[in-house]
Image (tube, rainbow, N blue to C red):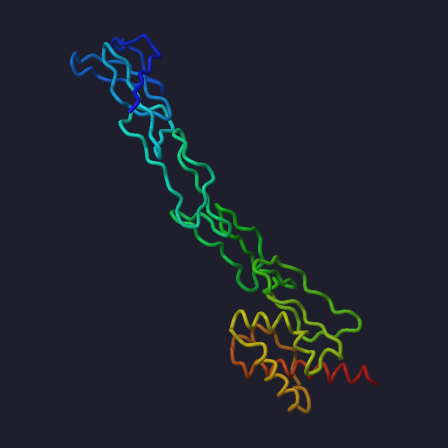
Length: 268
């Protein structure tokens, strides 16, 4: 190993009241018992031999994969850190600084691990995106606002207002927009496109197949002769029941209600 001697001060004598600083340290001479003021080793090196009354501190450079960041008198260099799973190297260890790691995109540092950024729950919008050092921050959407469940991290948006030629089929909730449609769109083949955001949300949350739900709704629309005399229900309360047949029945009644109360009147 290559050795070198640090010669910074002429003092190989007793401390004589001098105080140690960041570049020096005090040591008792094992032979004479006198206090010596020894030089520390600079960053990137370690202590090879303490100073004596006749020789200053000897230091040695750190080898590959090792480092010291501060002036020191430690006998061994420190081992460079290795980045863990879901981490990337921001700065390589170079002898005077340790490896600097950072969580990969989509993860953040939480105590001793990189954890995946949280995804906002239905009805909650993105308030602040996650960073390598902080998790995603979500907020509950206020009344009249929704976070589009079709997007992984959607901010809260205001519910749309139906246009003059459209009818409100389903009021907006915190996880989907208001569903507006024309009479032409409420046919057995076209209504599924109108409800697409809602159906996608059902598939994400409950694993309900869009094709299966479409068949159930169409079957009920054909069977019903008139719409149920009840107010439009909020879809989240419907989902609490989580029964496909009941859900299809409710959607069918909503479609028929608009068809009979609005579409027939428009056709007159």
